[in-house]
Length: 224
Image (tube, rainbow, N blue to C red; front, side, top):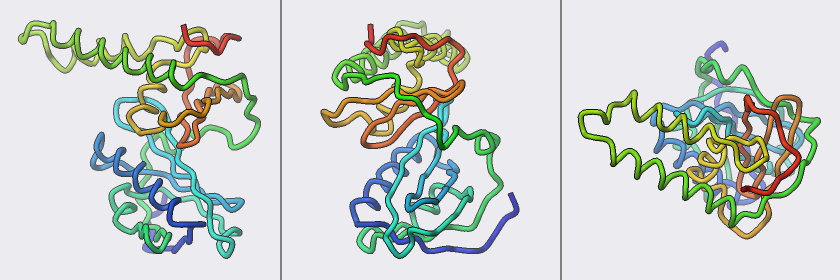
């Protein structure tokens, strides 16, 4: 993508939208301080896509645009840290930073349309599974002798745990882990499981996580 110095101003529907986008960016930057995000605006909605470091999933936080900006169309990749700095929560406005050269993931996006809802997931059960997986990783990592606690060994352990499917849904646990780390799993509302082609998406009121799993999708949406 060709670098640009344009800093377009987007007005969000209300301050709460800006607060939620800011919270998403702050959590993302804890994992990767130099993270990039891709912003797409169309149909009165701005979507901020990210690939949190080490999760191998795409996370998205959407925000409604103000009526005056409902017709705005935008597609640009920017630095997450700079975007956060230019976000005005009180004014509910978002000034888009200069574009950066997009990372490889920014060129492979999930489809906008054609999603089929496979069913719903109970939030308490999903949170329990996420917490158990995090606990297992920590416990097994601590059990490794210090000489064997290398980055390669820890990465292999993480791959083993986070590649497991969530029950019979076909959704890898890495998607649940990312949703947990980004604050998407709060609240009592059911979580949606959707599919479009090879993609699966965990949809929550706070954001979505999309992934292309290697395992086939099952019919059951009950975590086991």
